Image 1 (cartoon, rainbow, N blue to C red):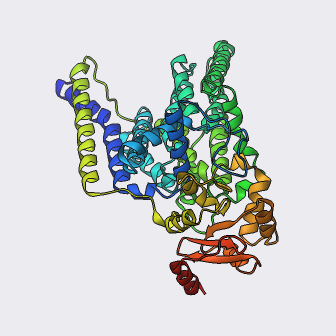
Image 2: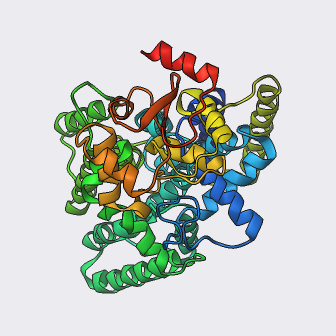
Amino acid sequence: MSLSFANSIAVQSRARALVPLCVGAGVYLFFLHVGDTLLQDSDSFWQIKIGQWILDHGAMPYTDFYSFTRTGESWISTSWLSQVLFAFSYAQWDWAGPVILTAVAMALTAAIFVHLLDAQIEAPRAVLFALLALLLSMHHVLARPHILALPVMVAWVGLLMAAADRRSAPSWHWLPLMALWANLHGGFVLGLALIGPISLEAVEHAEKGRRLRLFMRWVLFGVGALIASCCTPYGWRTLLGATNILSLGELLSVIFEWMPANFATFTSFEGALLGLIALGYYRGLVLSAPRIFLILFLTWSALTHVRSVDAFAFLVPLVLAKPLGEMFPRAPTDAPGADRWPARHVTALGALMIVAASWTSTVLHMGHHRFAFTMTHTPVAAVDLLEQRKPQRIFNAYQFGGYLISRNIPVFIDGRAELYGEKFVMDFFKATEGKKPELLPRLLDEYKIDATLLVADAPGPQILDQLRGWKRIHTDDVAVIHVRTGAQTDVAPEAETAKGAFK
């Protein structure tokens, strides 16, 4: 090998090392620029509120104290660490804090993803897969705990797949990742579930004489991961809390992120599925049984629940990385005898420059842009009026619960569906969406409601308009308020004007 060729390879190696960092920086700046779109889910309000409560009290919640329908009932926060991080960032920088935190998490996810893929396939293809994964996940990138757990998920599965590709056992040093995941978000159960099929991939291709020993090492690692997932303030109850959401039955079909995929119109997920099928046919991609199972499982999860598209987008490429690397061989990148220390120094210097440039861009952007929660999801004017009237019990829309909690107003319902249970939430939706309108007056009387706060374009307000004993006092583009006519009935002039405009 000539000296010039060796130097060329060393330069390529340094450039490759910076690719994940450059991708991460680009992703960070993109989500920082579109930061307001990350503030569209009202669950962010109660996530921050709970995190602030944990910081203020130095304790963990074990019961509900935000609703008047489930006060005192058992409830634990399986995303407590994410909530604390969001609350701390919000206290420091207002809504810019959660935006920056979310952008950093997405940047880490992309950088780790590209780094893991780069071990098997060419950097341009790794970057292309990263862009496709981000495109598929865009609808679910919000300032919520699942985003902070995303880089941990990618790192965990990527490391396990790397061990399986080497036909070796995973390292015990990886178990803290599972502990971190379990404290960040309840989705850690996916990481536990994937240990089994990934271990079969390692065992299937190992030499016959060492398969049993290798399998037992994977089993022990799985037990260690299970124990690590209980290294939270709640211990083993974290496992129960994380799986409670899966027992909600029919309710999962009415909450958007838990709905099945809808192919009535063409989506990026549909395009990804068709592309995956086309790749298999066109290139004659041959996979082992465990890899086929992993892809089918991740595809089934994404088809069953929209929120699982994230896992499909980032994990399927990791499963396919080695077969694709064998299909598209890469040129050698390591030169014998090449001096690696200068390469490391250059990489470190490049990394510092990228981080410095990203932070400078953040400071400049925050200097002239104030991040704010999307007002179309925030009933500010309506809640201001309710605070003036001081009703005791408010029957609120599901998506308004988080905002009411942020205003220290006890809620009828909010995004913690596992707390309220399938029947309670289904009765609420059927009553307010007009599927069983006779349920609405029953719920109002059963829970002694004296005011309602419902979505403006939902059937619920129209049903209330027809009920005796209820009067509309406020309407805007976001929310509608009704009060019992037997309660305080003095109506503000602006409320009467809004009522007349509605009619």
